[in-house]
Length: 251
Image (cartoon, rainbow, N blue to C red; front, side, top):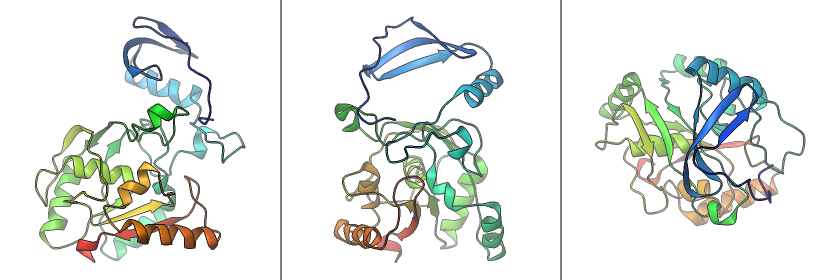
């Protein structure tokens, strides 16, 4: 659980942490005692294997039952690099993608280290969303450019995909391929260059993800949508229901 957690143990640069079969060194303290940079011993395969077998999901208080790693791993997931489940992807499966392709919808992927929604520390929560590394393959960058050139619409699966694509935007129709870090904060004043539509979970007013959605639609409209969803019994958070929002410029 992340809410109302006690303070973490005091760590200094050079401390070694033993996490099951994994051993890591503290390389940096990142301006907050809950933010540290670790370097794990071993090769890439061994590190991923250790994370997959020993890791436990980040869990919030609204889901009291213990979660296993496969509960938060989306069916389309690749490398285990996300800090929190990219939960918009729960709405998709291979059957859905097949149906989309039959209707001419193209599908492309990127890799991103999805950040967390809450840390249990009010000071640190005020900084959210934190920087999020991403990698955009050449084929995905080309797919975006091709779609924009022919007047099509780019649909992002999740708010973090919006942030990655907009951070990588080189022009109004192109994104740079390769590795990068999403540092840009997206909100009501953001002029979106790439993403026209977002498939997202239900986010509550005041959350950083809700603020990002205000780049697509007016805040008062989103608040009415949220109120109607609550009244209708729809569920929020990562295991909840989904909605699709198209930005006003593309309406």
